[in-house]
Length: 290
Image (cartoon, rainbow, N blue to C red):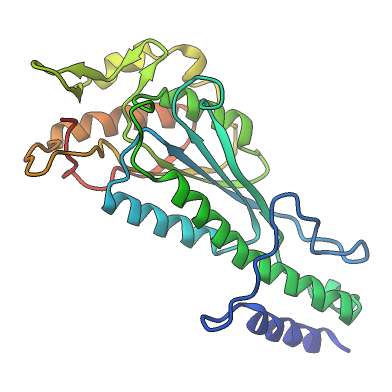
């Protein structure tokens, strides 16, 4: 069988293997799963990864959550990558940075020579496995985020965001991979010498109108500028900035100046880590703390 014929078989296999809405293929186990490729067929190299970080102290504002989930799905659906879901809610043991999902979805074979030299049986089984795991990775990611993006309990009040993101970059960014970093967080840093909260007269807590330059000077040098990964391409999108719950009938909103200050601060921090910031904050109409 020539290379062109085998390539046409590959295309047909992917059309068959992707589950339809009527009959969903069973999702194979992903974490710790063996390679889809037998020893006789060299597995193509994964060239990218998607890191998804959830601040569990952030209220899952409906608009921010919807857009976040849509962006995650659009990236994970591509397959051929490593997908990691991380969450944090403070610096206590078990809350500092948890790895909730870590999966690798191998690429399909597109090299004509490899296709031509592969036995048809192992080749078909490997490509069917790759297609099913790509589908399963979307479902596993969605299920994991559904469990994380819930209203925080009173025990999850504040989080040290800069520390969590710094450790995400240090521990999970692979210099060999093109990396997407998606963050769901209100941006309210607490710890490492910083406190973005203030106590309202009569009780309650609200976000401070921070001075971005002054806060940059307070950030410990161990968390700023020391975790860049050289030539690694890291692109970031951020949702949930200052997204917090409000009482029924409350008309308090974060104004444009407040959001600009937080946007500017986090852009400074992230660019110090050599991250390209492609978006931060869903809207300017996010209610303040009550």
